[in-house]
Amino acid sequence: MRNKGLILISVLIFINLIVLLVTIGFTISELQLRMSNNQLQHARVMQAAQFGLKTALQQMQQNPPHCQIDIHSTHDLSIKSASWWHSAQICHGKFGQLNYYYVVEPLQINNCLYFDGGSAVKYWRITVRAEQAAKNRAAAILQETIALPTKQTQVCPTTRYELSAYEQSWRRLR
Image (tube, rainbow, N blue to C red; front, side, top):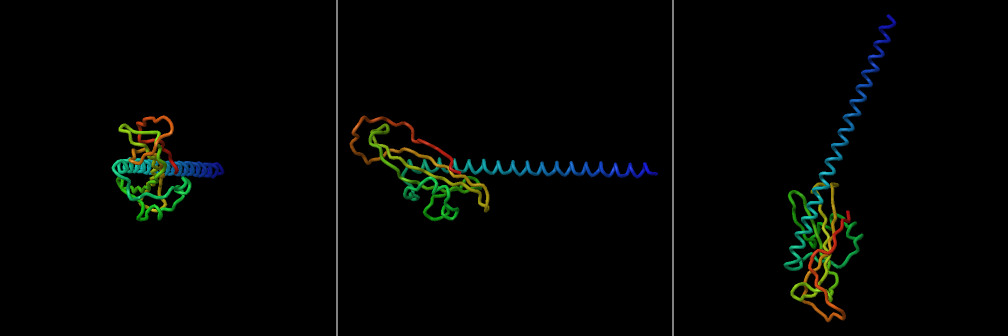
């Protein structure tokens, strides 16, 4: 009779261990699923931000958009609130179901650089913020410096050099 009680307790302990292992397995699976979903959301937001950069560059090659702002520090732009990015002075667009917003900052003119045709070079900085529509979702901020021909010229005190690429630098802020 005593052996039957010992066997019952052993079986109950064994069943509890199995339940514990199954629960841990489900918890790990759920965590992995959440991490995968988060990575997917982040990758989509990055694609939207890159699309926004390309769109802004195409717009800039035609004529500067209405969303020019005074020069800000990179840090200032990276910490701007979502409501600032959603304001009327900011250019915006959609990439699938994601929204992107961008601003353009005029930088300096370099008369010692020129494009094929002799135009001096003017530098611009484009900052794009892409986000999901829902609150507290993934967001990415990318920044690119571009060089475009300008009609404004002054005399270059040194040798002039030809520039062939519009895109000069690219970086991720967030």
